[in-house]
Length: 334
Image (cartoon, rainbow, N blue to C red; front, side):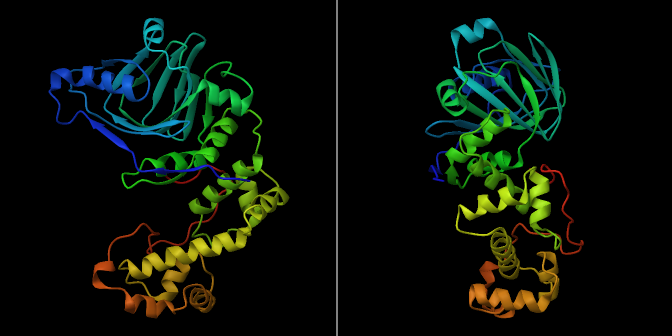
């Protein structure tokens, strides 16, 4: 298995916040035509439109994170002819309910669902209470190379791939970061239901996302991960073997990294509390493996942290018990 990694440092931000109210819709349309997909936009009420979009163009795919107040977007045949996208579009709903009208009917999408459609077939989308979503635009030629077909037979709604949402969302963070474009594209192909050329890549990405969502569960096992992403334990083991790292080692490393962030990030919990919050069933075992990994005891890491290091870091709520892993692959926040 090989990786096709790019650096996400070219995120472009567009916002209507400082624009004249009378021109916001027009300029929103202009931006989307240039940066993503050409659309017509209509408001649903008298309130001014407010929208923000983050865009990232990689070698073979375009990504966007979109937030907006209530509105409707249309891509009629006239707009398709004038501004062809020649692409497949994937929309991952994060916040708000959306409808999607197309020639074959209507789909309703809620948070945790994904829409896959041919961007050059007329459609209309509506967001009565606003939206937040991730958008992925895959050129038709790239989609054909991935799946062997040039389009999807009809627009489809699917449960969101947590791995895909994590990958796209991470790429669109303002600070940027490495993006495994190859894995992202394979996850798109898998979402459409097509057989992917490298299923190991998909299994590995899905497993890692499931682990991240349930990292603090002390009962997280290979059986739970495999069941959560819908594969056998044997396939799960093979996926991790391709990286030279076992699943238990991956889980342990991620838990230790989380514990280190808590110790240097200002948490006042004791070592036992941090151990429990990070999924360790034994404080003494936690101390042992922490020292083996970092070369220092947890208490020494906390003491050595400079005052400027004590900042809020993402981590579990130490006032709550560790989370138990669910069997579904799409639990957790985006």
